[in-house]
Length: 297
Image (cartoon, rainbow, N blue to C red; front, side, top):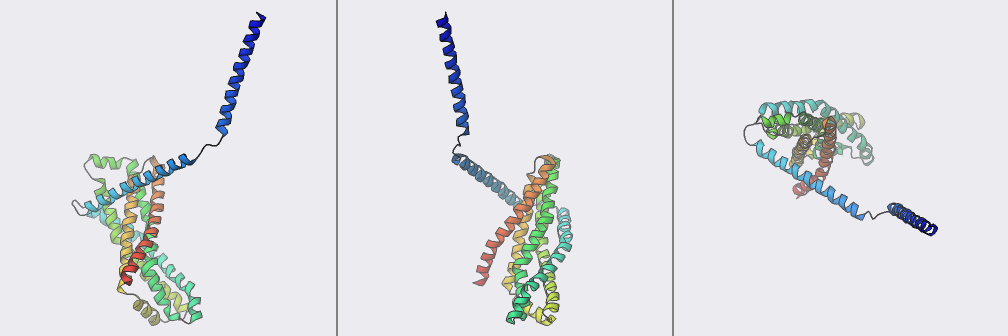
């Protein structure tokens, strides 16, 4: 019997030692860093797939919006209301910002002009900079911050409160009722706001150049007007149209895909403003290169 008991004790100790060794190996194995390459590749592939899906949904919304903008029924009252909200509501901000943008352009270039005796070029530089580039971009970014966020939050609130589902249940197309008026209003209003920003920017530049560089009104305005060619005016008109389409469609897109209650509305608003602002700046680079190449040839 003692021999049998001793054999049992030995077996139990061996079994315990085997289990202890297995637990130790498992612990050590869990602490060994695993290869991260497959995980990174999976994350990259997943991100690309999500991005492509978002681009697909956004493209479908744009195509659907353009198609329904030229077919009845058209909601003219909603379009006029959106034009008032986007255009008249943004006018004080555009006027104030445009005036100081033109003023700061003269302040930054006045010392260089005086050094080289080229004070008469002030109007030319300011006019070309505002009409070609700063006017459309600044107006687009301001409208993005004010109205792009408003569009996304308004539509997002309607989605989370099931108003959009109620429209579909009653036979009303949400794209035709909600998206098309906002897109058309932005397309009409943003070029006008850009033109106002250019004009008030030139006026602010003239005020500063009058007291800083002692330029007369005839010197400044003649140089500014003569420096602008037809191609410059076309560039300053095409850019706001493209920016308006980007801002309005992105705001509507993120508003309609809102989910998650009030927190989802906040996330959609932030996403709409960030994506629209970045898209405007990126598109401006390629659009400027294309337009300069076309009108310079």
